[in-house]
Length: 120
Image 1 (cartoon, one colour):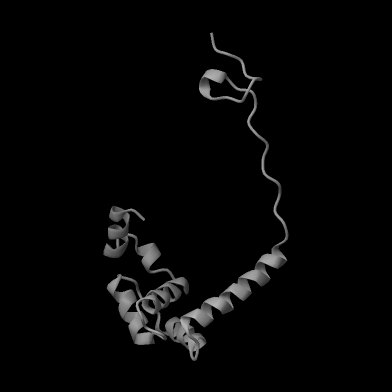
Image 2 (cartoon, helix red, strand yellow; image 1 turned 135 degrees about the vertical axis):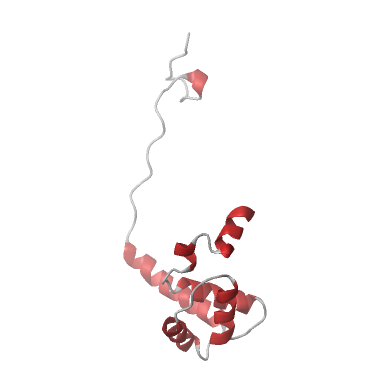
């Protein structure tokens, strides 16, 4: 985010984002605290960080998230998450091929190679 957008986010201008019911805000706050040196951040620490950022905290969701992290370091949680992502990625199957290149177009407007028509 650009500086003015991040200020708007922190000031609460974007309530829909900061008040999201998603668990990702708990994950993000937990990981930020872990990066700051807390080996296993507590519910109170996560709540404090989120409230400083202007986010609403659902005590039940936070408690459920913290319960899932008990006895694990941030590094262990990341490794566990990688395994889950591999399982999801393997089940997703391959995507379609990429689109073909652009047509001839007009050379004066950056169109394709020799097939394009030159503007008079």
